[in-house]
Figure 1 (cartoon, helix red, strand yellow):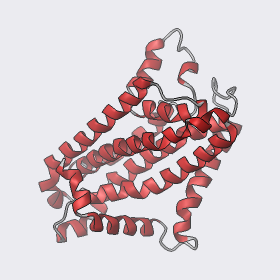
Figure 2 (tube, helix red, strand yellow; figure 1 turned 90 degrees about the vertical axis):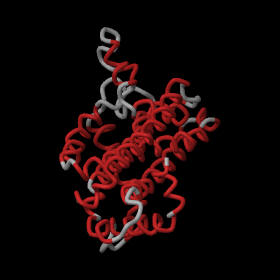
Figure 3 (cartoon, one colour; figure 1 turned 90 degrees about the horizontal axis):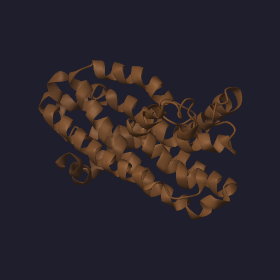
Length: 267
């Protein structure tokens, strides 16, 4: 796992890349870095307006505090989607730097993930505060969310690194990711509850496929349990998330190592 130990060995360079990406994201704006706080809030409000008010999700909108149910699933999904989109082109967008200077190139996509992490932390903090206010049972379990969120970060970082490395060689990857994200969103239980999927009783295999075939589903279910339902996440979801995070990190390291020597030429 030398790919990841370089984060500590070159932590000053990583911090510099992170600060550069964060500033570039809001360059020229009046509010500047304040948008890193305003953007997540506005995004959550838009999702609430569209899906909780205008388009009530069938089979879930009758839940008490459905708006909070929706918000509990948003941070992980938004972090995943934005990280993959940003990381997919990160090596290409930094081609001049990569060609001129020899440094651990995995720092570039991982710095992009760290930039998206700012919004993830803000969104999760807002949801945690709302859970404490509106879900009395969550006051004993909300502290479980941060360690679960760390596992989500590891999962996303591994996948994002694999995507970035693969896209440096095969440019179709970024277009494939863009095409997959929309259907992937609707196949992830952000808007609905797994046990209320229409046809789940007659076609239980479909619910199981969404649950265990989608690596984001156990992550969202695990986070939603302490934040919305006020109890510890199911052991199966937690174990799945741990294993998925480890496998994602291994996949990211494997793919990056295989193409590392070609990146400077391909970009």
